[in-house]
Image (cartoon, rainbow, N blue to C red; front, top):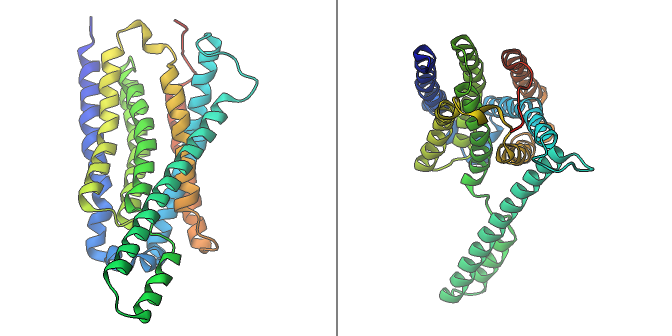
Length: 310
């Protein structure tokens, strides 16, 4: 017999997670109406101290999320899969290899995008040279332009963050949906909500400062907002099945790749600025410590691994 109170608690968790995450995702856009961060030239906007501190605060949040929250879960799942003979034992650290694979996968995708953008710019410049013939002065001006670095696609950074975090938040939602007591559902919802709300604000800030087109930004933030409720729904659907506590090969592999993707985004896109100042460093450390404290609370709620072999 299904516990009606448990189902109601999980449905309330779905609604709360969706609405509150949406609000926090768009708070940076509301603040931008007052502080006009995005109306500055793009290079100057990222130099603006408050914005830089907020972005690096988000970088600290993502560093803690990757190394303290996501990676240990991947190690736990992979170890359970190997103990259950669902994955063959390896002479190397499989979770770490998955992480590195995700890192180089994101690296490869970005290099391909840069190559495509560079080719498109060069093609346009060749067309201009062919069509316009206004003397040597114009030709000299055009020849210099290809030497400039191609502008990074604004949507690429946001895409990497959203894909990696959405995958992880999906499994976080499933953790809520698979809980078997009302009190644990409420505690997990509270812990994951605070964890996700900080991420939502930081992701909204990063996408906004990347000058991502409004429609694309809305799609990104909507996707990030709905994945956890979807995970809760999936957890509810499978909570009565015998496979609820069995380790998932797909889950372990995808979360491992997501870790590597996040590491690339954090270190190459967010905290890559050299000698940005002590306030920026402290902002990153505050974000890290905040997520570290939340992870302690989440870990106490979840307890030890309860995976069972099929």
